[in-house]
Length: 110
Length: 111
Image 1: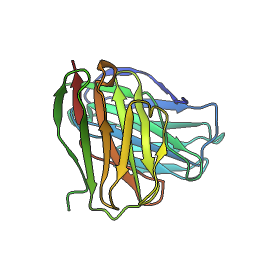
Image 2 (image 1 turned 90 degrees about the vertical axis):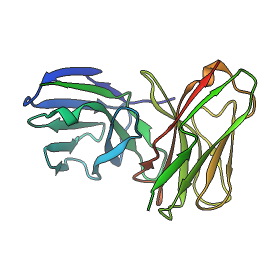
Image 3 (image 1 turned 45 degrees about the vertical axis):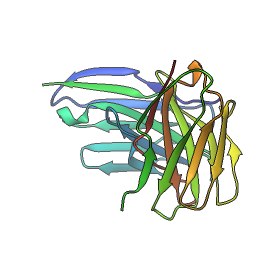
């Protein structure tokens, strides 16, 4: 089945650093979503993007819907320990099923 | 307002045993989904239900059955568990197919 290519697979950073991760697809999407999963929990929606080129922020998080509609980016500024977790992207074409990326595991060291 | 709840939280089965995973939502959403999550594989869709009374196969339906009991509840059944079904199972809901909200998960170990 189709899955999105998400990179990097894992990141180990120091508290206060900025983080960038991205998601690419061979297919176009109408919607891009970014989720975060804390250890032992279900994914929680962070940001939803509905338009090519759209740039949306949620606190220290900023996500962009790529112009080609085949990619999306997530940035986290000034990371803190509670940012630890797995970040998933997901793409959707119209009301079709969501396609998830394989996740980026983020570890933040004090 | 609990959102999406799943039971049980943990389960250990022997090969060949059967069990049902329960999911309930109080968000009045139409669509419900079952995913499995395996290391390095992300989330893969097992079955989904676009509305009460309808169910459809997802990416990895083999070995599973589902029931959309009513608008609130969507259950996943393993008739004869296999070690390959060891995974974390997540239920999710959405109003009309877009943004999905996930439950806390059921961790299943099949010996």
